[in-house]
Length: 282
Length: 306
Image (cartoon, rainbow over all chains, first blue to last red; front, side, top):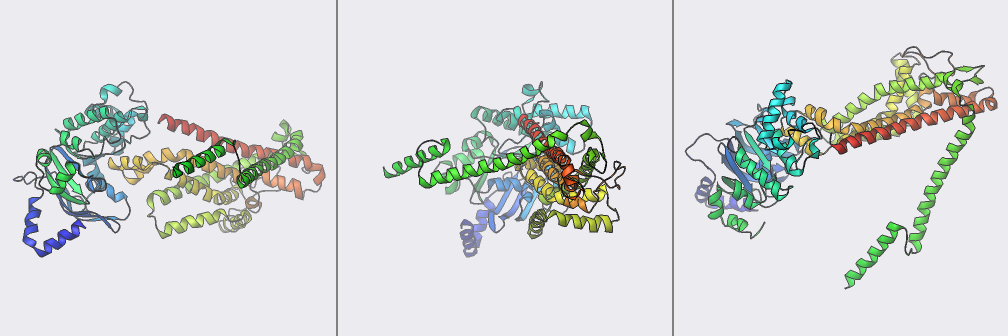
């Protein structure tokens, strides 16, 4: 409905809404290169449209948080970036999505390569029912690495990267499912790091985890963002405020506002953003 | 107030159902006892059959019965060739039906786009399960024995039994594949795995217990079938064991059929018939037991998270 009225408005007084549109994303003007660039993205589940004309630019490194009420499209948007939505029958999209300057929905794009570059951590920790070691080694192995010494090295480095090494170094061959929920989630992060991605997508990674474990993951995210570009979906506005450099606010499939986190939280430009972060709905 | 009272009575009723105690009213009482009696009746019938076979069959069971071929026009001796034949034909069935069934299930569940065609395939499979076994037997004779030129043989009979168990194998495998959580698949895909890698490294290891159980139950049924092997390779009597996959063979269910209905001295060989029935029964029970144990072993493994 918002989209429709916006369209009508655009038809009536075109120039005004054009101005409004150009106001939107460019988070780092002056720079040409963006790690992720999304242009006029529309996304559909069958006949139901889930994203409306989303435009986003994300620069290298740092944390970008996506906030908004349930069903606003932020997870759908996240899953567009590593083409995980391809797995859901009946979905389609138009618009352009670039990662590292490459158009990822172009026919020539290799999805396997894309997903190696753009790792993902899910809402529920989902380690495989294998040992801790085999979980981390899983990615390198499916990409063809067999050398044991090299695997050992990657496993250690990744587990250190996931801030889990000290806790598990003596029990690498125990089942991953014997770890606590928070540890499992850090294991999943380590598992992603093992394929050496550039971008990490996180879909509410702390929503199934207790507060203390959540804090550890937040610290980890802050550390990781020095080497990786992190895009994190979160339900928790305090979390977005704590850990992100940039924030995007989604509502009913539209990206309402995008900017530096401090600016969004202290001085939101849009009334709906203000209403949401002050807790008037959502 | 009123709502609360209603809630209370329904809680009380639920409790009386759950514990089997408390006040029972009219139709509930009748329903409960009808169901209970049905169960007792089923168990009673099963008990009678098992008792009948054991009591009349146990007398002939001895080492010689299990390890010797029949002698004196099958009025004496053992049933060793029939045991071996059933064992061999089951192996052929496994070799044929398991790879085919599992592969079909993987295709249907993981690869095929879910639409009219796959629904049609599933429906056909279900209907295949309802086809009488004698029809399978005649089909096997027409196709494997004649058209493919296998002749009456272990391979023709094994393939025929394989076709018979295919619906069970495919359905059980599909069920097992479907229970693998989506989170595992997504986790694997997100690391850049191809569909085949996802299936091989994440889905199959997790689905194997279910696949095995379903398959063994299907085999147990096949091992006891007579009609499909009647025209495809089972022999009335053979003095020697089958020496190749192209040989004819004796089989327990067919031997039992002969001893019970076709023998020239039926009343004289009645004990042998009962003994054969007992061996077949034990064999099928063993297969079922193997299924249970395998399932338990893998369940424990899953519980330990490996």
